[in-house]
Length: 236
Image (cartoon, rainbow, N blue to C red; front, side, top):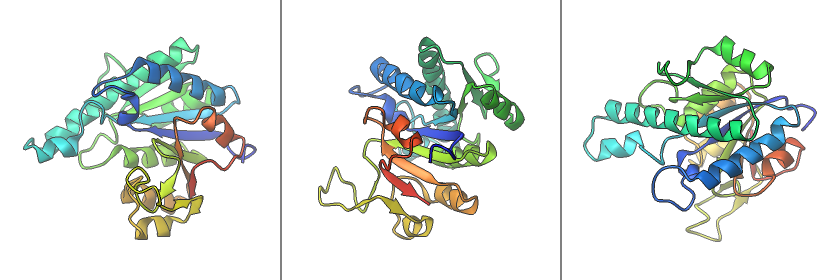
């Protein structure tokens, strides 16, 4: 696998940045993530990142509490920009060069997302963090990750979660849930497995983009995935 992979898109949920906190960003998690990411960029991997905003705001959840769905999603997009800036800072403290590109115009703090410029950043070895989802309401950051991965012609989409791969049920609630080492796009969609939303997986299927789901708390897992180790679940 390591001989084939040159460019990857890493999807990190906003909740992953919580650590042991109830809200916001845990600096210890940022440091850990930055060190994990450095292990693969040092191998020459070109890396794009999509970050969620659920640790601050989740548009769908806000809509359920009465806020207009579009407004809620826009708030969620802004939350992803906050997280992207936090990750950029952590990476720079690890002596990594990083750029934040936003689907919403926030020129005072980050660049606009322009596909050609993003690819140029990647080619120059800059970690490129894609913020604000797709810039449109009703689309999750999983869908944004699939879209950006296809646009930058990534070889692999990696989804970092709290469990090591895809299971038949939530393994936290049912310790007898079946773990899948590999599963097809169609089976994932048919079984309605909730690790990633259906729209994102359909996009990956249509563009033959493999997806690997893994537990981000396993140290050196990213590096081992790049080296070809079968960690978590491969969707493809």
